[in-house]
Image (spheres, rainbow, N blue to C red):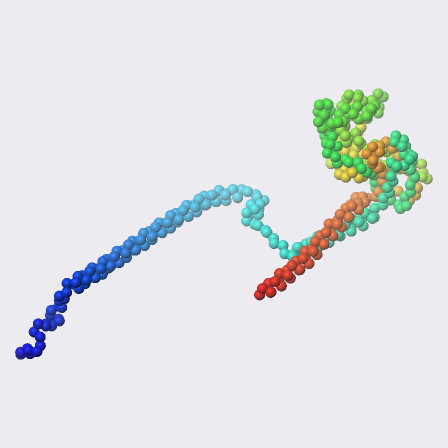
Length: 406
């Protein structure tokens, strides 16, 4: 077979011979591109290897941290178990009250959040209770029968003398009628006055001047009481106490002891009504007073209940104190009160009263306590009403504002 002449002889089959470029610049560019591609492949492989390495490092670090945390948790749990074991042993030994206290202190917390309804309800209920108590006290006070006579302004009653005062009882007074004296403008609550006494001496101890100087100042010696003071031992003919001797009892409270006396009898009869001084002092106060072993150095009987009553200072400048008790019924009629007026009150612009009064379960007549309950109950009820209407008003305003915003 012959090759035609028109077909070029220098062209061979593409499958047998590669095409060779005769341009040198194009060959170099192809070489460079091939190098760049290979370099990029290498860099990509390196980056992938680095990423894998960093990921492996991070995973290792995370695993190490997790292991450390697990170890710490295990150690903490072991320590807690070690601490709990002795605590449990101690708690078993503790009493139920201690366990309850620990539970209330640590495990039980009550924080009530009051609402307007509960607050108003509490105020109204408490106010009603106070008003009821005030009404009960007022009713019981009105049931008490009382007669009060002022005698310091009576021209017949002169200091150091006896005087008679006529009065009438219009309603029968049942037995256990108490006799009181009342003083006005006498401040027994003064700090210096209250401190001026010796508790050891009142318990019967014989003390020296140095022992009582700080407690009883300024009434320390017998001459500080009054001149010519006598001993309580009336059997001793020469019972005038040494002016330089220690006053027994000493102090301002003892010196100002109320010493007026009262006698009561009916106008139609000659016999006096017995007024007993027993049962007028507190039993706890009786244990605090005892006479001295040597009564010759003592100017008054400290075990006498009238003295014990006086030694308990009053809180207010207007006060009454029990002087005695009548253990029989006082009938209606005219009576004569005989007073030995020994206690001066003009120096402090005071007033003196004689009082006869019955008692009930709450004691004597006490309008002040009833008024106090009324005031507290009224304030509580008024506060509840104000809270309710105030909440209703401001709450409705807030609702309107929220509705407008919507």
